[in-house]
Amino acid sequence: MSQGNNIQLGIVLMVATTIVFALQDGLSQHLAAEYNVLMVVMIRYWFFAAFVIAIARRKAGGIRAAARTSQPVIQAFRGLLLSGEICVMVAAFTILGLVESHAVFTCYPLLVAALSGPVLGERVGWRRWCAIGVGFVGVMIILQPGMNVFDPAAAIPLLAATMFALYGLLTRYVAHEDTAATSFFWTGTVGAVAMTCAGVWFWEPMIASDWVYMGCLCVTGVTGHWLLIRCYEVAEASAVQPFAYLQLVFAAIIGISIFGETVRTNVAVGAGLIIAAGLFTFWRERLQRIAG
Image 1 (cartoon, rainbow, N blue to C red):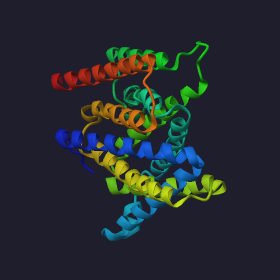
Image 2: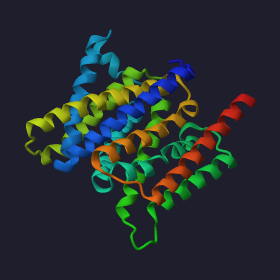
Image 3: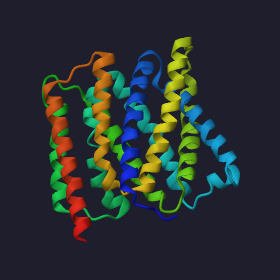
């Protein structure tokens, strides 16, 4: 399948993705504070899988066509990776809150840059590595390793960022051969199977009002990942990735206004370094592309 590079559409899709993901994260934090994380993610994936199967049945060729891929192992790994990443990040929300979790998570575009060499075969020059190093310093400022107040749990969103960066790169990789519909189908079905196996043992009764929140979470989950898959399909990652930082802004607004969170100085400074390093990396990539 050929890929285009409609940068304007890609930017719109990425901004929309960050807004939907921020709303999704706020809903996840509320529900995971009351119920087991695995159960919350499992129910979300049930809706996700039902939706992708319904969409597949309506298209020409049905489920068989949607599931057809020459890259089943990579597609399955993507599904497992994303479901695991969601569990890790939701756990981080309950421990650290939205602001600090996302402050660390903002390093994932830098991890995309670092991993683009071994995963996609792209060249990673010394300037990009310097920017990645600066971003890592930013992460360390946020985590404050070696300080008396350091909480090892603060490293949880760093793990989530690494997993999500790899998921994003693999999404871009499989898009060379598979349609967005195929990637969407595998993401939903594999994740649902994995989360059912893990979460069914932790079922808890849910009150009526929280089922409303759960319904909203299911809708935002489906919408967000569809937008992300479409974004990587229509535009180059280097063109749209800088706009992924807006998720920190939207998540911080939700965390501060709804959950009463605050922004510590080291978190603001560290996040600023990470974002600056990431933007420099994308600027350099743009210059190289123009020069080439």
